[in-house]
Length: 329
Image 1 (cartoon, helix red, strand yellow):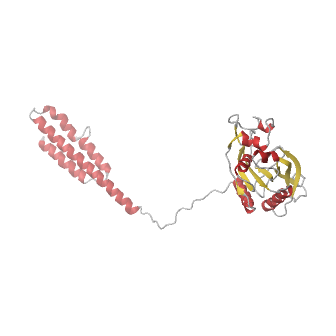
Image 2: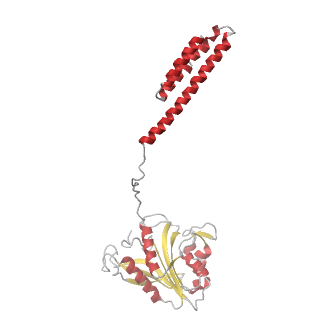
Image 3: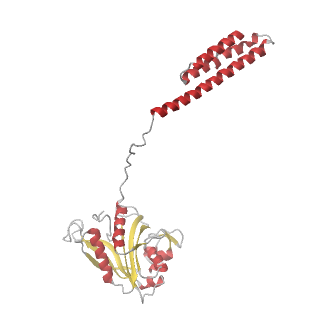
């Protein structure tokens, strides 16, 4: 039996050494060490040996099995090293080749018009102001001269977090915060996201964008407001654009007005776009109410100011803004 084991050993080692891939190694493992392998069959036949021969043959079989297993593992490592070497030689990377061009998306139309408006007002000496979207009701309403019984404060119109904290319904709280912390002269615009409790339809959304402006200084008049908005309209919509004011009411400005621009399609003659009126409503504006100045720590006897605001949704009056060449939904 020793001669048979030695013969198996020589055959297995020779077969493993000459193997050229892992499949051949696995076949050799099964052939010699598997459940029906040649060494396994010898172990099963040890029952016919004498008590003196069993330990000798058993030890010899274990020794040969360990030798075969060790050689198989060594050959596997050699195959892995050879495979890595082959890949390094055949899969070289040319680091001098240009990289793949990444196609970037375009800027969203709302972001584009906000950026355009920022550039226009920065060119007129304005600064960009920002504030929290989750706001105290004091800043969202009280400091802006909006009384407790005003419809805008109803839960049907405003998202309340608590009785005193809301999702801001306008960017006007930013103006109040700036007036509290900064002495005049003040010249800012406040772009940002605002929230109203509106049902979603073709012209309404509970989340939309606003851009508001504020100027506070000595001797600010309605003429300054109109001149500013006229320059903005010409820069944004074209040099031939005209602007007009219509009387209106806002609790935070007095006097107040709605500002319209001449229709960019018909030039004011009347067409389908402007509903034959020749004008398109652009924004609300007015002189800052003395109470607002007073609530924010500014003396209305010394300073005055104007404010305006536009948004990217259509309200009950048809107010709307979009890209500079398409104030239409």
